[in-house]
Image (cartoon, rainbow, N blue to C red; front, side, top):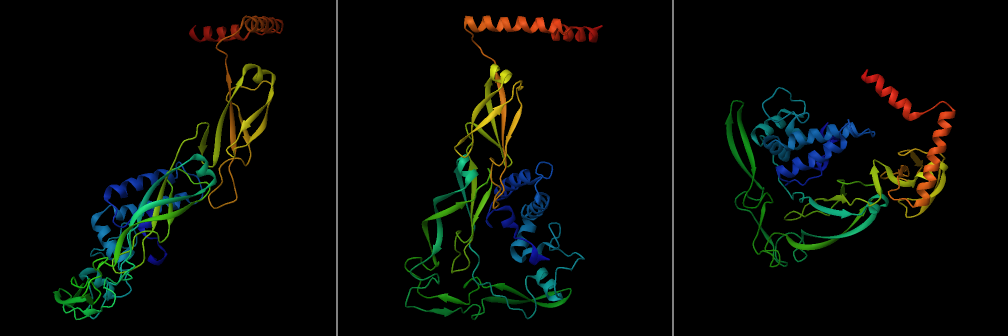
Length: 381
């Protein structure tokens, strides 16, 4: 079961040394984005459950410590598991695994720490509305720990050798006998002197002083896929920090902030555009030019008698779906603008229009103003 689970830190997109506030802030952003009540996309509910499970573990200091040490087995079958003295032993392949969880080691078992995975990095990047829609490449510069080129990460000065650790006799572990209600067990811990490597550096590297890594400013090219939205994390695998004495580098997580557009608004994969038209265009109809997010324009036919707030759809002219050839639509919402100043001739023509409209209504036995007044009067009687 644990083999099929994603790393909880990867689920939330935070580094392994993230603070409680960072974990909480990221969780709130993701929970809001993938909540089934607001996100109807396929897979959103499963993603929401996964996010909650990860947060339940990483927000609890004891569960997080157990997870950092034993992975998913350390927190039981899920977020509510825990590595305590429960009755559910389904995640342990043997009684030795169970005892190792309880006593931080098992009889006759040697576990060397080896190189640890490097820390993940987080970088906040602001992009334009158009860059989010169509994707882009961004070059960023960030400080990080990198493998020392002088010693190639082993921490020893080139030309010198390491010596066997005298504290652990080269095993990398300190073994202590411990009595418990189950009998006698051997508690195995990492050797502090050699940090579990079994060997110590006699002549540290003059460049990194034995750490095996140095602090550098690195330029990284980040590929932003088309269709991303505000708050999305873009993962760049292997561009995080390296750990001391080698090990797999962590990942870089680029958190995107999208600048709002002056005219366009985004709603999922659709784009909304408000088109102002005049009273005469709405009444008589017209063909108008409408801008699109592609930077081009298209002609839109406004039928006669169009009412304010009517929406017209431009199919396939919205936001691309991430990692897909599909694309949303652009919705053009018309807004009839009432003129605020009229010339004498315009005013005369409108008055003539109003007179003719009233005559027509009277001729047809209709008076919308009188009908509305009668309805209001009936309500108050």
